[in-house]
Length: 381
Image (cartoon, rainbow, N blue to C red; front, top):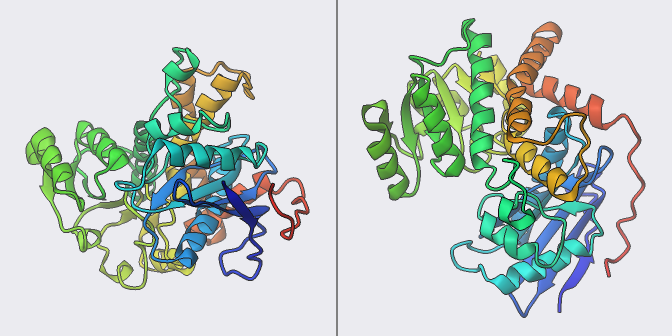
C-alpha cells in the first residue's frame, strides 16, 4: 500500500515558494518517489519523471526542488499555459523498473488530483509512461496508439528537444558572430543520449564538426559509424575544455562550476541538460569570461512543448487558436531562437547576465497572479 507524506522543506536552500512536495513510498513495489509542484499560476504543473540512483534522500530532494522550479520558468518562457513540477524515483533505471512500480507511481500522481502531470525524463521512457497511464490520466508524451490520433504531436519528445536546442544555438551564433549559420563551427557535445544524438544530427546536417563524449561506449561507436569524419571522440571528464566554438552540455546538471568554467575555451555554452549551473553565481562567471550562455530552460524547452501539445491534443483541451499538429508544434519550438534573441537583447540593454535576463522575462509571465497559499502541514490521502 502506498504511503505519502507532505514535506515541510521551507528552510531548504532550494525551496522557492513551492506549492507542494510529497514523498511517496510503496514497499510492495519498491517505489520511493518525491513529487514537487512549484507553481501552478499558468496551469497544472507538468514535468518529467527522473529515475536516478541518488546517493541520499537529500540529494533527491535537492534535485526535485531545483528541477520543478526550472519547469515553471521553462513553460512560462516558452509561452505554454502550464506550471512547473517534477518527480524523481530513487533507483537505477536499468534495475528497478517493473510494471507494478509504475502502476504505484501512477496512483501517487492520481492522488494529487491533477496538480501534477508527468512525462519522460532521464531514466524514464515512453513505455514507462504507458504503464503509468494505466492508473492515471495525468501523463503526457504518450504515443499516438494510446489515443488513436495521427496528429504528429505524440511520443518521444527527445528529437523535439534537440531541434529546439539547434534553433537556440543559431540564436547564440547570431549574437556572438553576427551570423546564425552553424556551418564550419566546431561543437563539443557532452552526452550522446537521445537528445544529444539527435542534436548531433542537426548540427552535422548544418555543416558543423563535432567532438562528442559519453559514458556509454556503444553511443560513441554509433556516432562514429553515422557521422564518420564529422565527429571525433572526447573525454567525458574534460569535454568542456575542448578547443571548440560551442560547448553543448546534454548530460546531467551542475557541469558549469568553479572547476570547469575556467577551463572552457568555447565562446558559446548552450545545451539540453537541465540545471547546468552548479550555483546561480556561475552565470556571472561565464559573463565575466565573455562566454555567451544560453540559459538551459530557455534553450531546452522543445521537450516540454512537445509533451504539452500531446497532452492538450489527447485531452481535447486546446488552449490555442491554431490546431495542434506537428507543424504548429515545431513552429512553436522554433520560436526558441526568437526568445533567446529577446533574452540577449535584455541582457545587453540592462547589463544583466543572460540567466538574470531569462529569469526576469519568465517571472513577468508566471507571476502575473499571486501565489496561492498552500499549507505544508496537511497530509495527502
